[in-house]
Amino acid sequence: MSKIDRVSIPLTLETEQNWKLVRPADGFTRYSRDVMWLEWNEEGHFKDRHSDPEVGRSLLMSPFNESFTWQTSDIVEILEQEDNYIKFKTKNSTYELWKI
Image 1 (tube, helix red, strand yellow):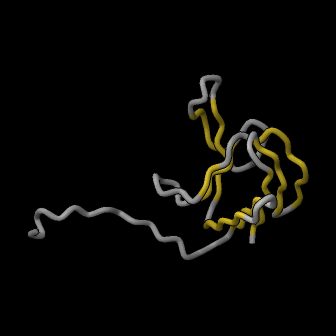
Image 2: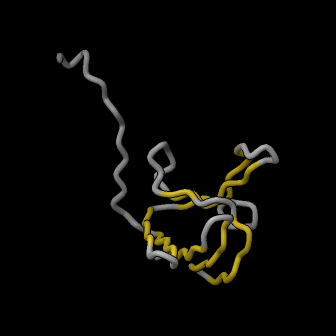
């Protein structure tokens, strides 16, 4: 294959880890550089992104492309929230998220 025919696939490697997500039920853990909270419309399509959690939003962990680290289902209840920490329940699981 010549250089002209090669396909270049962009790959984002995150070495900086500022956030830690844990699902206590099974110990599932993920790390990422950044997080955002996604809001959905009534049809379940993307509506907006936010920097703060709220009931009805889901967590998306960076990188923010098709290779994202993890996305939760919608938050149904915020169980505990402090500076740099939140414990929340989604439609499927309970999670704890720390800024590290």
